[in-house]
Length: 155
Image (tube, rainbow, N blue to C red; front, top):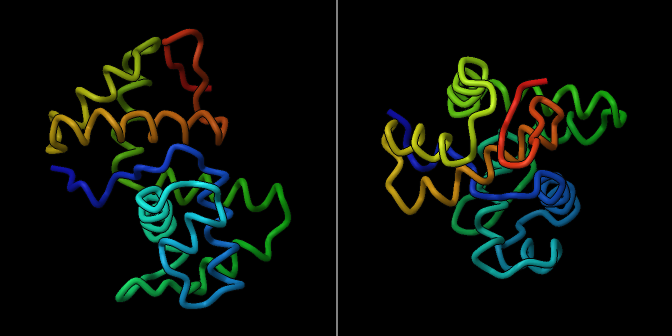
């Protein structure tokens, strides 16, 4: 069973990376500072901070975020190396493994199918709906999957 904290709720993977870079330069960043930097509302600042934490790039204690060694390592890589490193990190998360299996065994499935998978695996109804979008967007952004209309396929 999945826990809500194991599933990202930040739709734009590039903004998760901007969050990591910002936290590296601004130790002790709050979610409000992060939100302002990436041009999103305060609530979104929490989502993007959490997603960077989920990837193991930053940590947060009492609303004070700081970079972790893996985050520094990631930021010091070249563009292609960053994409490869990020892809491995994302694919190591159980939620993405489940979704990749779903898409592999059901080519042409939709975000609604991903929602059902998340819901069936313990993510509450409303949360699963929002997070299915993030998971699909990340796989597309990384080039692991492609979307044709509403249908999702692995590359």
